[in-house]
Image (cartoon, helix red, strand yellow):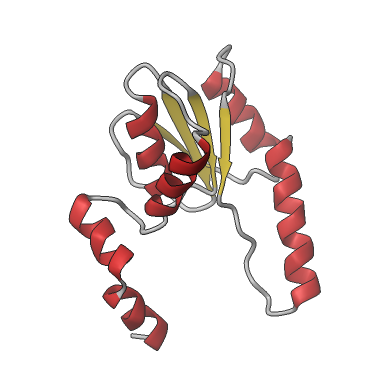
Length: 140
């Protein structure tokens, strides 16, 4: 077990996420964003890019309720969560975008969340460029 992993397991938000049933401590970050900016509303249709393991999708679904919908997409498979649709796909590929559009159908998307991150190479300029590219893909 790495030092980083050991420290993470002792961290308050990690423990709290496990206690309340969130898949990731990042769920609390979305809650903070929501409390400050009110980006999500009841009945919204939400797309969660870079959704694995599903913590942001869980919080989004809590907020949008049964009349809202949440669709998460990630390169990694995501264990199902009741009321949320997950798609294993790559948002940089046309096939994934088409599949996402097919799932959304005629609904208007109200919010696009993105926690996508590139594989980190350690070279700042490369990592930065990859990050910008993923941000641009989120806008498409």
